[in-house]
Image (tube, rainbow, N blue to C red; front, side):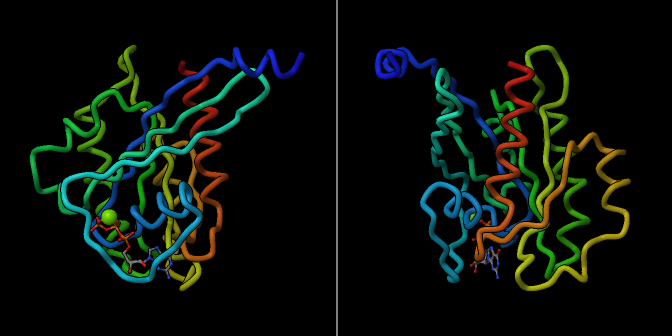
Length: 182
Ligand code: GTP
Ligand code: MG
């Protein structure tokens, strides 16, 4: 009976964008999440890249997360709107070892909110990732809770692509929100 049910599993595709300054670890987070791997060498992303993670959500539902890895350097370009199109979730990343990358999150958020909305016009669900938590957490901004509340960011996490910390949790949280909007 189960096997028959699985054949008819419902499939959903959710597009998420992963944004934030260059070098904060967007590609590393996606690679950790989709391949289970981490590389300490830095290969700058040009334009955008793309990977898929499939979640066996429950016995009736399979979800394909299409993770769009937007180059940090694209914030100064004109293509971000094209890359954001039809996304239903966003992970905004900054780097705990470079506090200036937290300041940039507001610019990314403004760019995102100006250019993409859910079909009903609401902003797309967004989570904030404080990455490289394996190196330091002393630099976590004091006002991060207020910042999230003021900017309609649903949750924040200290993550590490290197040590695989909180990346699954963050994506699951975003997926619950995407499902509510679906
Ligand atoms: P752009 O493509 O230029 O926008 O950068 P990016 O955000 O994709 O950064 P990328 O994932 O390429 O990571 C930049 C550097 O930080 C690389 O050397 C990574 O190995 C390193 N890095 C990424 N995540 C972590 C982490 O969680 N911990 C540590 N220690 N290093 C990390
Ligand atoms: Mg990259």
